[in-house]
Length: 216
Image 1 (cartoon, rainbow, N blue to C red):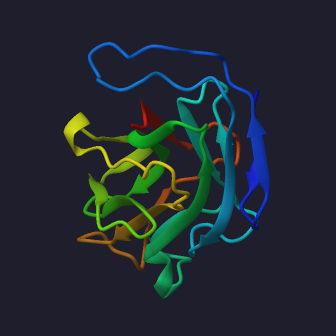
Image 2 (image 1 turned 180 degrees about the horizontal axis):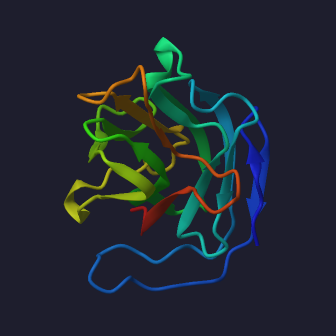
């Protein structure tokens, strides 16, 4: 069961989950709550996710949510504008969770396609934080040409480093991602290097995996 939330603003998606109980073995956190999760897309900003070009969906078992993009592309070289080398997207989400539970982002899987000429480089960055919280989780991944293939990167957060949503409070969750491409030693007057995080065919997306625990 999948519901798309167009990021043009304010839409609400409600997904029913599969009842689960207990504690995930070896993690110290609770398995997903049995009730529904509601995610509101409060705002979406950035050159990589113009209004209407990003969507969010929650998995039926409450363990993950997916962001799909249709215009998230950074490039340098022939046919590029000077500002095209960097694209970013900040999602500001209201995540309504069942009473008595809180959540954290345990890992994130990023996917896309890259064509980097020999000598060109690229970087994918992301950071995650709750509104009003000084704690931020961030990660980056480097790529070097020559590449002409799909790419995947995973950010994993250790149990001790998980940043949990405050219990009993509704704090917006922010995800700020970035793609940056550099020509490096390649010749941008003759070649084009690019990196995408998009889903024109519905097969390339970004998945965020949730960890759950009961509030005191």
